[in-house]
Image 1: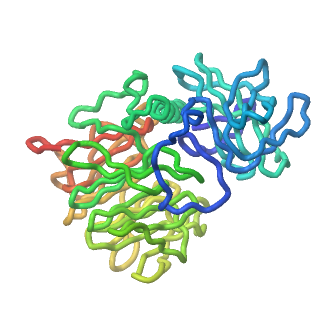
Image 2: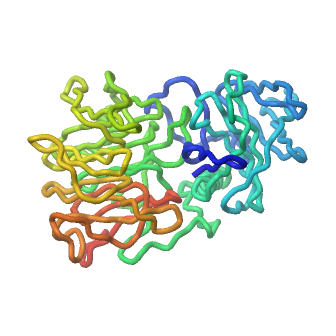
Image 3: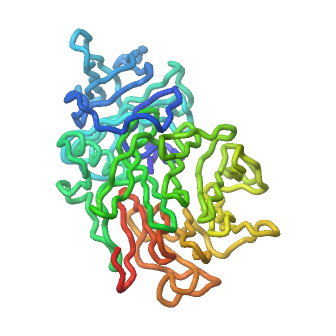
Length: 436
């Protein structure tokens, strides 16, 4: 997570990976092809899709126009923005010294959004030796209280950014970071590592698996990939988003950074307007549910909505994460980590606490969760419920499974979860005697 320096107040986690900034809406129909321009393949290259007001070393206003730039260290408390356009002069901006939780093999530049204030932007240059410089700016030119506080980039965020840069710099299609050993983590016993890196993952009961990758396609959205079982690798699909679920036909529904809900069909993408979303889940019966953007109940929770075939209908309750069981009923996790299951008579609270939840298979339900118990490296424990999900499991309580992660989905069988950990690495669990 990002941490505030020289203050007691924490800044909430910001967007993962390398972000291109934009104030306009983007549909998943955008191309997710890697950049072809050699200028954009530098690890220190950033793109501003809106002008940003920064500060000169003397404290006066410095306006950086929209466009591409290389970021360089220009001396103590200064960064240099070099425009892609050769006829434009470099810009020198004031920067605050901060640090990275992990080392990098080469300088890496990023532009990230302010989480507490959407007007704020951070232009950050991470240097080898765990040193970083943060130039704090805004879209409006107005600085809010606390906006000049530098932030620290976490290990997971640096690693994802570095993997993205390695992919662009070396034109590789599989940025696993194997050339940068600290990016690679051996799989826990019983798990298999899959290529590439992800931010979210979804699967259906037929074993069709899709991910939101780490390749930036603009406006805060990231590329979409489909697992190809025949070649044990990912196929890129046009479009972008931040959350993903898979319907019974094996095609994804995506929530993008603007909260729009899009459905993939055989002919392309279809938007389902009427309600913006933060998360989405789909059952084996085809039921589609979302967590909306309308605050409800306890601070931090948002409304629950169901797709009725032509629009979104509100359901009582609130949460932050959602999945759907084979019967079409949602399971949710609220902002406190509490787990609830929807039934015929309403919501039924379940035991335990969770960060994420998934229910898979065509029968059951057999739920899996990312629990609230830290297991190291920014990951949390994995738990399942239901006889057969793992050795010693019961139908009424959670049983721990080795490993850890942040995001989880369940594939063809109730005992085949796929997990994304805090580094973005993808793992799937193998049942004894089965090929996975």
